[in-house]
Image (cartoon, rainbow, N blue to C red):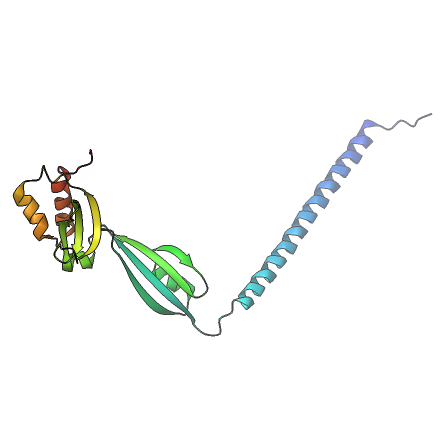
Length: 191
């Protein structure tokens, strides 16, 4: 014969069992959290020791400036870094391109024409009829800074053709854009 257990005793034992399960789970989670915190703290201490600086860090910093005319200037600096936070703050306006233990390369797009173009740049036309910017007055020996598009010389008025043969000096971004726009109508390619 089976003993009869009143419903109240079953409810009490079930409640007690659920309470013990919840208590055990809570204590286990709390214990794991403390172990994880200790492990994280220990790991951070080890990382700090691994990267402990015995003096300033010396890096080569390369600054690349890219201008609207396609010219890229490069400045190379030797930096002595005392605090990485200060270093990154100094270059927050620059885009990081590459970095390794010895060198960091940053880039910045400059919304202007290059100093080279301002000082010695001339629009001209090559013998093949390509609108080009030359380093100096256009001739066969001048270095080409940037080439644009083929000009349909047949459509070009003679005074504009002479202007290009002699070279059009460019001093600003606005002048650069105006010359490009002015000769776009004479492009051999469809617009």
